[in-house]
Image (tube, rainbow, N blue to C red; front, side, top):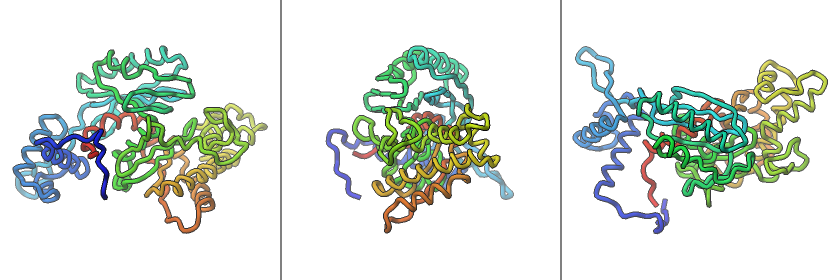
Length: 396
């Protein structure tokens, strides 16, 4: 593929550029195929054994990989390489509209310690709780934390740190500055759907890690999308790409979207939409205060109204996904968020809606559920730090 050079971002190749690229290649072979031997990496990469040994020694000193013993075939056990995952290296902060979840994670994306608290509309109060928790998590990690990642339910410009969270009407909250001042650690911030897409790219399904172009549809209080093109998250001008939750797909939705419309995709296909449908159907059964988690529980137990509310929501999810497929032609679409827990109940309705809404002649696009669990945005927050360990510097 021919790519035009962006002269504003391009930099001349340094003398150690090739060495840096080879280092990332070796590290990623260890990540993907561990436990793996130096000889196997040499064969896979066509790099000399001496070059592999130098890179491995450097990665060991940096605490990224370690040697482990392989199975013996009669003699001395072979020395193999694996990621060093004994320590916490990142803090992830999933700042949601209802609650904030914070956790430490190791190099392979495993959550080690986690805590949560209600998100306060007062940004000063929320910031105070975030700083307190961050200081606690840093202290328990004994100096191994290298950075903090934050996922936000709003528009974020990663270049400037400017952000807008419409649910709370927060504009340019000083999250990064406050946390860096308190912990002396670098802080990265991104939109929650973008962060979850990054997590899918690095820590999701093996078949998705091999895909270069996909869309993550995040279903929570609203509906967001994270777009991955050519193995990178596409953020657009000032981080505004992916706001498909506000595309018009109909009229008379069961709830308003975050900005007050009843025509937007998220007004038809969000958790709030499913809750509104269920409450309307269940006026006489005493379950008017049900939340989305309990509706999923009821549906999994076979309750008719709960199943109908989820299937109707899946129908509208499918309409929006069909628009994404027709407009962007991704190799795959992933549906993430708590709704992934009821995937077997909704997948047929969702795919039928996609098939009915899409124009004839379009290639079939795999639609998959996320394997990152009910909190892909927490994994996304951790990935904002962890992915930098494995990603190569992009070429302009």
